[in-house]
Length: 171
Image 1 (cartoon, one colour):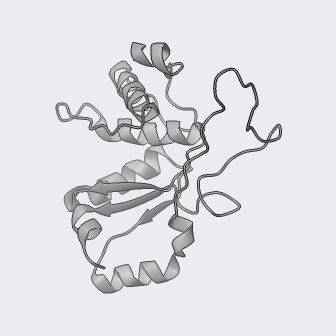
Image 2: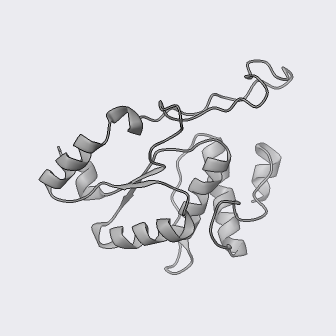
Image 3: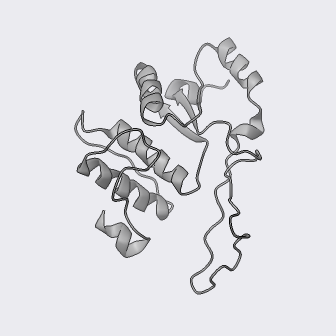
């Protein structure tokens, strides 16, 4: 998307390196637009005709965020009828991602919660970049990386996949 270059940096010219597949030009434009909107801390919705690859664009965007240091966990809320498809697409397009499928009966969800420590799912965004003109101010030592979770080794899950019904349930 030409607007990214003008406002926040360069648009992705190719699919993110960790994405297991290739994208069509309109899909690259879609993830560029998502990245632009994200860079301004705004929300976005992809909406177009069926079959143009919105699922793949969303997954490619999550991989792009990972490449920029935002590893997750990302909450993906989908209709129950598409949960298995999203799980398959995550496995196919994002094979390096660790995915927690949070779905099932109330008892099954209790079991999932008992196995997952709350701090593992805690999200902390990466620190903001240093202000313009202060080269290196506030930056860590060379080679130092920032993680987006409270665990030493990075996020235990890159994606938590669930449904709307489960997301709004009391437990």
